[in-house]
Length: 162
Image 1 (cartoon, rainbow, N blue to C red):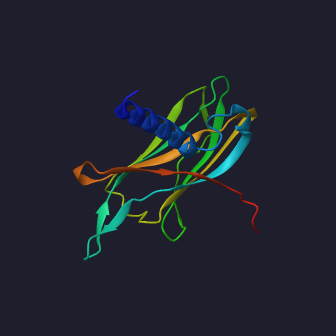
Image 2 (spheres, rainbow, N blue to C red):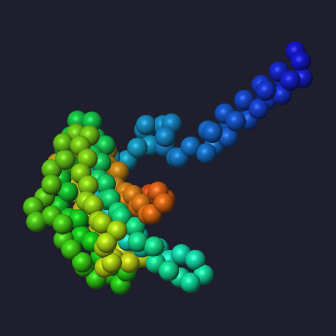
Image 3 (cartoon, rainbow, N blue to C red):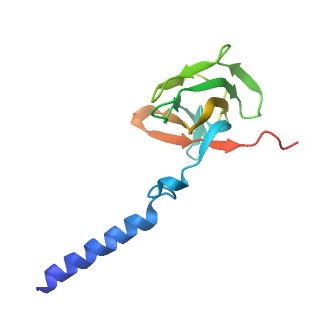
């Protein structure tokens, strides 16, 4: 076998090993997936970011996205509250709970004209289900001028920290 073929074989093995090491925990073993009947979730939102040496705010449009990842069961989103940088409530989005069927997605759009939220804005989302289900994916997609975009993942929080 030529040295070149050995090199490519070795690189393939190294690349595969690196991919396995870099995969998120639980991706390969379905038994590690945690089911839930509900959670309270914190989602960072950046209605603006500060840019450049002059600290100029760059305003971003935001789309909060809630994806029911369960194939067979619905979930209920009871709270989607938007807070500013100082933690003050700006808006409660749902007067009535929203039911998401299996694999259904809902979203809330915030225009780049939103000046209330600020760099530390966030959503608190509460969801529940009648039985243990796959937890939804909840994230915010921010898009700025010049096509710049990024995603802000959510984090499950415990409200019983008094």
